[in-house]
Image (cartoon, rainbow, N blue to C red; front, side):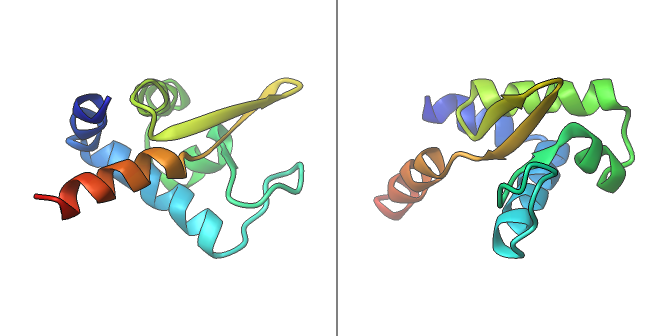
Length: 96
């Protein structure tokens, strides 16, 4: 699983998406449903100048690698950082 996470992190756009999600969690940004640290694809597209389908592709890679979690609410999907995976990566890197 860590191998997939590192592969996902090799793409600058995915790092930008993770940074946005991290800032959403730190700055108490709430999604339309009032949940802290979540962003919809629309909010991410507003911040990154790529098409919604490209952003969705990158989010799918991040989700498969375990770096982000997705929550569906009606027709919207909200993404947030998966802290468990981030903690595993940090632990791994500190042991090197």
